[in-house]
Image (cartoon, rainbow, N blue to C red):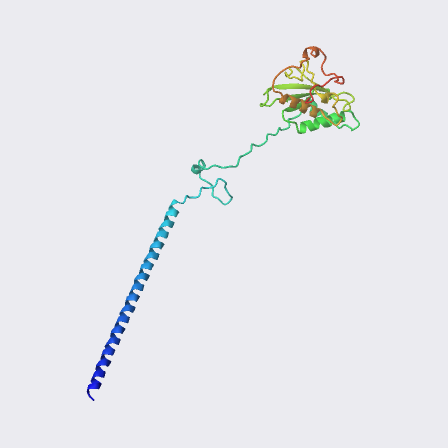
Length: 268
C-alpha cells in the first residue's frame, strides 16, 4: 500500500515541475516579445523625431532663402513720407502734367476803351462790331491780340504771335480787318500788312487765299474766327513758299472781295 502512493507523488511532483517550467518559458517569451515591442516603439519614436527635425530644418532654410517682397512704387495715403535720402532711390509711376498756359486778357488800347464805353443800340450797325470787340478782348485766343486803328471803329489790327513749334517761330504778323457797311451779311476785308509771311496761300501783296473770306462766309461768323483760321493755316505749314500765281497777283490792290476766286486747296 505504501509503494503506490509514493509513485503517484513522484508523478505529481514531475507534473508540477513541468507546468512550472512551461510557465517560466511562457513568461520569458512574453517578456521577450514585450521588450521587442518596446524597442520597436522606441525606434519608431526616434524615426518620427528625426523626421520632425528634418522638416523644421527645411522650413528654416526656405525662410532664409525666400526673397523679401519688393516695395511697391505707388504710395497710399497711410504710408509715411520718405526722407530726402531715400526719395532718390524710389521711383513713382505717376506723371505730372504741366499746367495749361492761359493768355491773360490785355488792357484795351485807348480807342478800344473809348468805343466800348459807349452805349450803342442794337439797331446801330456798330453794335455787332462792339460786341465782337468786347468778346475778343475778354478772352483772346492764344497768340492773338486786337486793337482799333485810329478813330475808325470799323478798322481793326490783329497781331499774330507765332508759337515756337512752327516754322514761323517767334515771328509776328499783322492783319488789317475792315468791316464793310453790310457786315455781317458780307465778310470783312482781311489781308496782311508788311512784312507778309511766306506761305503758299499768302500773296506778297497781303491777300490770303481763304474760302471764309469768299464763298464759305456765313453771317454767324466773326472776325475772331477768321483770324483763328489764318493762324491755323500758318501753324500747319511745313515749308515757306509763295503761291504759284504770286507773280500775276502781286500787283493787285489787296483786300478786295473774293467773289470770283477759285480755291484749289480744300484745306484753306
